[in-house]
Image 1 (spheres, rainbow, N blue to C red):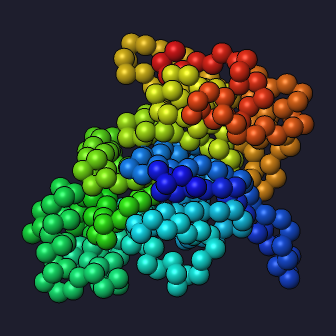
Image 2: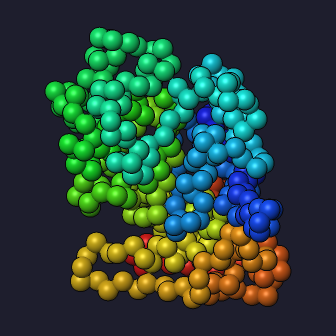
Length: 337
């Protein structure tokens, strides 16, 4: 284990059982996450990107033990320097870790209790973990609200009295309340208007720099992920198919799926007609994935070996990992090409 890392995920799997019949017997499994591996350096932002249903949200929730993983390792380096496997420890041992690992949820309305005031929502983690109570907790709430760009005078209002962007700021303040070291942001801007997205993204980027946060930023929009991430991992049907530094992946993709995603990013100049790659067929079901390479039924470059042998995620260039048999041979288009 590398002490420059804060998180190391190894062969993580999360299978959900499929029940059928009167007796509700297990007839199969949805392989939402199927052998995901990556590491995360301290104060790094890793973008996790892919189509809806590819398993990126499940990865985040499994890392935080909101789901109990089917198998694999999730090793987290605590503030004391001790490494712990989050996938193996008991829920009682997990509680103190939740001070260091927090989540920002996708929907800024359903993730906030409508019966609690903003003060109660943000101070609840402080009360549960015994960090602050009463006046001290209220002062901490006021400080957090200022940090995320909200007026502390509004702390006794309820979530429905705020806009979507303001509600997401409340969720962010709640996540920051315990001074975490790792934040998993699950599509935190996808439910917001474009102009508000930019404000929240800039806020998160500033907080990450100022507070020295480590972050996994989950999204389906590559242009959003590019803005905030140091590295990007591309997921397809439960697997990571490419992982590289942001600039390297955006300019020199090695996987055909990444190339297709990049072609869907609209150009900044409205006079330029996008040269979009349209994939054939449908995304395969994670309950019945194809043999060999998971992407081969839709790949424009597929050859017979692709349907027979699954490619491993291997380092093709320094720091650039890809799961493709022909990564060294293909000449793929980067962003804006």
